[in-house]
Image (cartoon, rainbow, N blue to C red; front, side):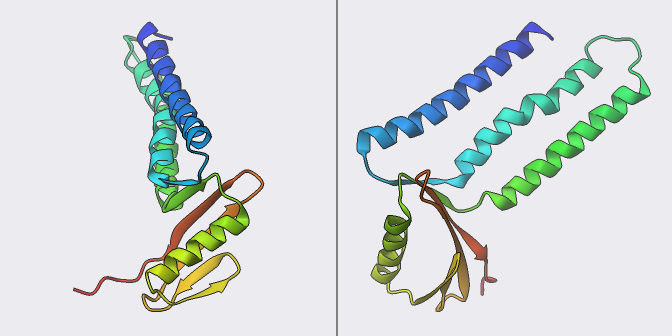
Length: 160
């Protein structure tokens, strides 16, 4: 493995560690629940798997005279898997992640916010239907680890 590749991997691991350390430190210092956009986690995850997508390309063009047919297939397979995974995660990681919450505090905070905004809603298992906007929010709370996620279940078409 080339030296610059190892340096890049170390830098990516350092960024991941700082991100996670920052989240934990914020929770310890503020001692209050907080929200983070899921896009931050998406970006960190993409950064983490980027070397696995780039490494076959580096090896294919590292100065070998003739790459074999299996090397080319391997490179395209890795690239296709990377793009498919990135696309899937772009759809899956929408909304916000609440950190430092319990099941009851997340529920109370969500409904207090909707009441303050004067948005009528109907609660069902795992989701909250926003009646006026004909939209639905998926709510997943993992109280035992102190996290919850709120994301749109269906996005209504915008009227121009």
